[in-house]
Amino acid sequence: MSASNRQDGIGGAGFRVVIVHDYLNQRGGAEKVVGALHRIFPEAPIYTSIVERERLWASLDDADIRTSFMQRFPFIRKRFKWFFCSTHLRFVR
Image (cartoon, rainbow, N blue to C red; front, side, top):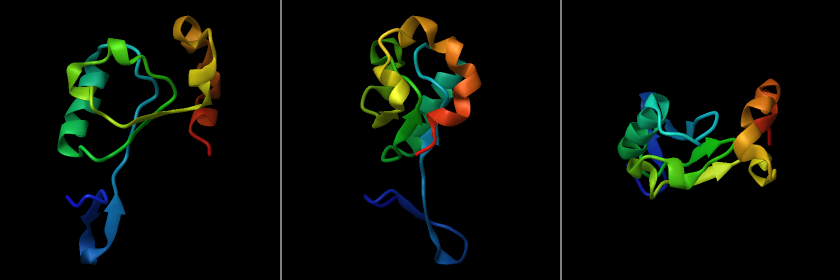
């Protein structure tokens, strides 16, 4: 993989790899999968609504994790499930 995070696809068309996860604030099986994907595509940024780095697997320590506006809410760590109904808004630019 090149430094620009592009892969040659069918017909030589390049594509960009990104990893998306709803929230990264616990150590579970889905987070292990994100860590495995990060090892395969180390330059791929990870987009998520919120992150608590101190609660992640070590495989994500060096990951480029980009969060949504929800990360700035002071109460989000304990009340993140209140916002499930707004899931679609988390990833809109």
